Amino acid sequence: MRNRPLIIVGGGGHGKVVMDIAEMMGDFSLLAIADDKFTTIQESNDILCGPTSIIGNLLEADQEALVIIAIGDNRSRFRMAERLDLPKERYAKLQHPGAHVSKHAIVAPGTVVMAGAVVNTTASIAAHAIINSGAVIEHDVVVGPFAHISPNAALAGAVTVGEGAHVGIGASVIPGVRIGKWSVLGAGAAAIRDVLDHLIAVGVPAKVIDRT
Ligand SMILES: CC(C)(COP(=O)(O)OP(=O)(O)OC[C@H]1O[C@@H](n2cnc3c(N)ncnc32)[C@H](O)[C@@H]1OP(=O)(O)O)[C@@H](O)C(=O)NCCC(=O)NCCS
Image (cartoon, rainbow, N blue to C red; front, side, top):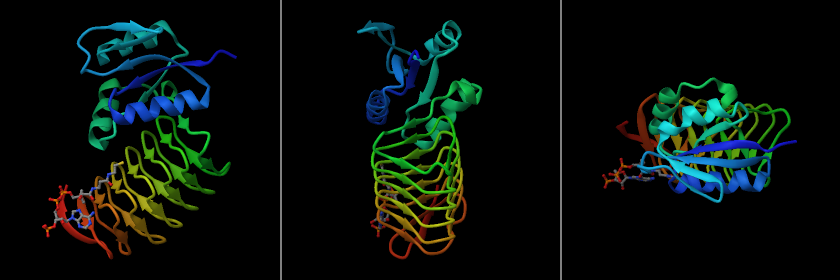
């Protein structure tokens, strides 16, 4: 079967990791890297680099082509998805071969699961989320769209992470706790109580220090 052509949106550090995962999976052939930092369209080794305005034509020309938005910042990823306004079928789902995702977990298109991550049974990860390297997503966890679970963060059973929320590197959340929409749990924090929407919480145990 033909490898699916892939357009990676975002040519920064996160984009590089996503490109590496796509290569490791072997299911895709890289068609283009789209980023508005490119002012002209260039081609090397059959890969196009150009501004995001090239995406529409590329998708029209090749109905098999898929897109992944590889922008690390949650709000910027959200804005890009709004701008592109593509049906979910046009988004790729990327999973590093060295990640463990249960057959009984759901991972939506547009989401990336990185090396060493564990997504356990009956967890549910919505579209355009990032499950970063070594993150642990336990059973019955619900991760909302555009959320980011950073490297080595751990979400215990039945945790809920709202839309656009960011769980920082090495942070932990005890069972059943909810991290609200567009909230940030700081690096190394331990959330033992719910964090409401649009708040920043840090420390062990996590305490709110600001709004987002
Ligand atoms: C929580 C966070 C978003 C706060 O960033 P910020 O709004 O720029 O906050 P500041 O750096 O101005 O710090 C504000 C205060 O919170 C404290 N603080 C910040 N982050 C903290 C953390 N993770 N744990 C404990 N305290 C923290 C600072 O020491 C400072 O305290 P002070 O006012 O007593 O000096 C950020 O520090 C953080 O942890 N981000 C996570 C990044 C991450 O994991 N990225 C992963 C990428 S893959």
